[in-house]
Length: 443
Ligand code: PMP
Image 1: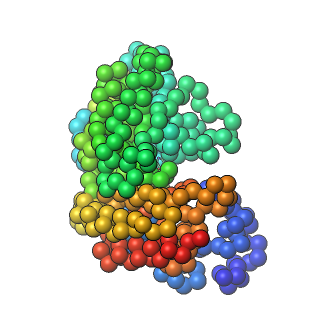
Image 2: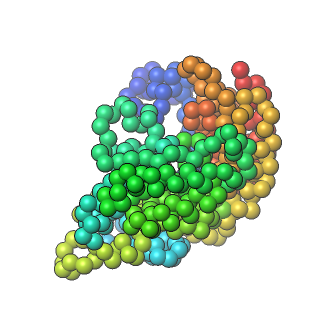
Image 3: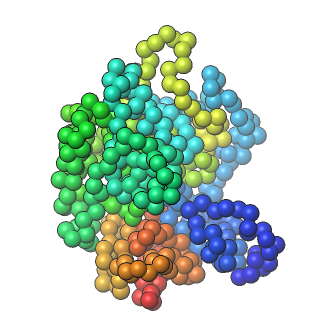
């Protein structure tokens, strides 16, 4: 479709420097979305696009849900902003209390941010400051994992394990090490749910501790299920073992639940699914169902209490954002939680997950498919790489699926799926029928 047919002047696409996008390619053939409702976007050329990815893993309640829309409209007219420092407004306290009540003990405090990246950098800073507050100032090293994605702040790209996000920018933070990722195609290909093999990957942490010494290590951060690098499900027992090693060595465990939070696995959080409680949890995305930017860090009582020791009129943590706990984001989040609760969405993925897994794993045997994996309402299809080819097959699949009215997401050779939690069985069928068609016709 030509730019003028989209109602754009010739140069109108130029000024916007798009994030994580092939700008020049996109601007040749733009994909513009102009409205959204429930499970569908509408494109500028008037087509309905089934959302197979909940936007960017965030619109868990679906799109433009009436209760959330209304709450945002009401809030912006009533209290558009309140200073975030040394001041408050009722909804930020209400939201924190409500979130804390959703979390397993001893996680009971909430620090608000505006994104996943900010949540990650906030959690890393809290971890460092916590050890100092406890008199353990040498505990400064941070441990991430290969193929981890923790946003794009300097903290996040440092603990993250994606070379593309790091190599362009020279030095990241010092004092960071990584353990291996858990993706083991040789042993676990086409596993449904949690892979059987690989619990011993957690023992990497013992090796890193032996190398640096526990007295120098502040925290370990992992995604319970790595999302952005292609849906890597942890082997059975892996997260439990990480927890045990961290506890034994007084190292804080941080779960980055920016994707897994708010119902993606069929439980409110991945901590509930795996029965493993970290010390800090980072979230964003589903907290407002993607409607307004917001993130949060959930902290254990022990961590919060460690800061609450000095004189009462002193600031305890020198950290925060102008928009921490923004009233409109809080209103959106409260209405989102209402929607999740009223519609049973935080457990809906559990009810649909067998159906989802059957439909997804039925793609086994299609051309180029070398692995399929799933958990809750997440799925991934890994395609055989083309050695030396600049364009990945998966990206072509994304373009072809979009032409057929289905939005999927790709990362390298992997197709990732994470629909809104309101998806119906009929829509799941349509999603995978379309994808099967796309894969059959892929060069
Ligand atoms: N952590 C994880 C696990 C994520 O998946 C993401 C985003 N995909 C982030 C952090 C960063 O979130 P944001 O883009 O909101 O900064």
